[in-house]
Image (cartoon, rainbow, N blue to C red; front, side, top):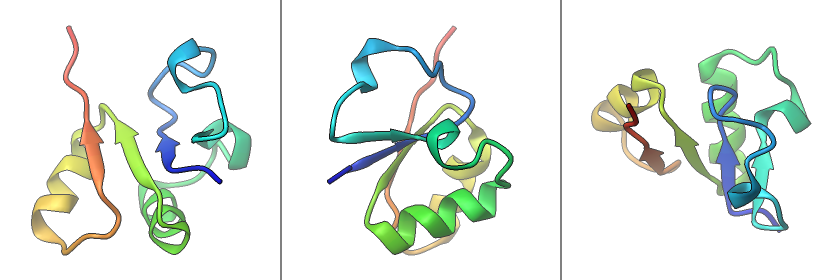
Length: 74
């Protein structure tokens, strides 16, 4: 069962998140809005992995779940 939901803004083919612990938004629905990704992660007990500041901001204002891993690159 997956533990991490990889946001659409991260590369789909990155080998780090290939395996049973990861599901990418592209495997579910790449047209989901942020709130739909949030709700899916919450319903399924997944941690969102993202570089989108919207999730970072939302987790500060909300009680978990879901948890968010916010990657800053560049």
